[in-house]
Image 1: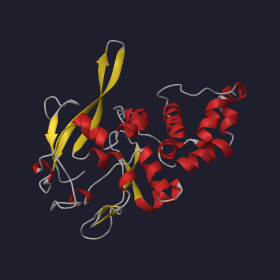
Image 2: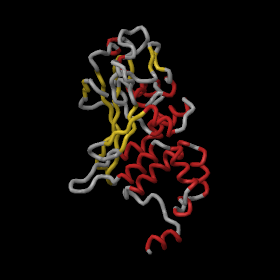
Image 3: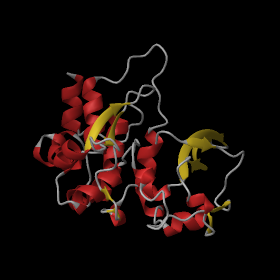
Image 4: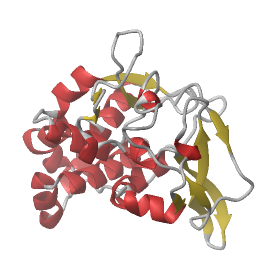
Amino acid sequence: MSKMDVVVPTKLTLESKFKFRCHKGIKCFTHCCRNIEILLTPYDIVRLKNRLGMSSEVFLDTYTHMKIDEKSSHPHAILKMTDDKDKKCPFVTEEGCTVYTDRPANCRYYPIGQGTFKKEGEDGPVEEEFYFFIKEDHCYGYHEKKEWTIESWRKDQEVDYYDSVNREWKALQLRKNLPGHAELSESKQFQFYMASYDLDRFRRYIFESDFLNVFDIDDETIEKIRDDEVELIQFGVKYIKYVMMLEETLKLKEGAKKNKKK
């Protein structure tokens, strides 16, 4: 998000306390939904496009723009703001959020920020989540008396499930371009974007191309990803890792291996 003063405490835990409340009567109501950059996650796209009754292609074309991350060359879907002077979220009115029950994870967390970093563990590198406060000059929510812990806020905002679905995908964002190495090719960027966001296209790619003739995918997984979009998100992460040669998460069929050697 832009135009914010991010305060990062030395240590912020799930037990950390803060006071905050957002409601229609507060004079900054919906101001935090203007002139901001909201990076959408795969599950955000699923919830929003289903809420609006759209395919992933139509939703992405209508409500997002692509941004290439400079450090990783990953393509990301960014929620497109309106073209008026306020540059507000397209789903926000004076009455509040029109997609509130399906709002993105970043909106659910606000005024808390959440990130992931990699550190060394006993058995090698591990990912660890961290939290920080987001304080903007226009926000009066911190002057309210309602007290929370980060844990109780997460529960109240129903963000736990979003995190569980997006966790493996978010861990991919820790990857950076190595010095002296080429950025991701346009082909890999397209596959990253498709498997992350354009899930309707990704499903067609799996079931309407030679994909299942090339990769050895078990029948149970095939049935899960056919109808379950959360399972498709998780499978998409495996596909991205394979394409980017991060992990050998998929196996080629024997015939495909022989053709590859030729």
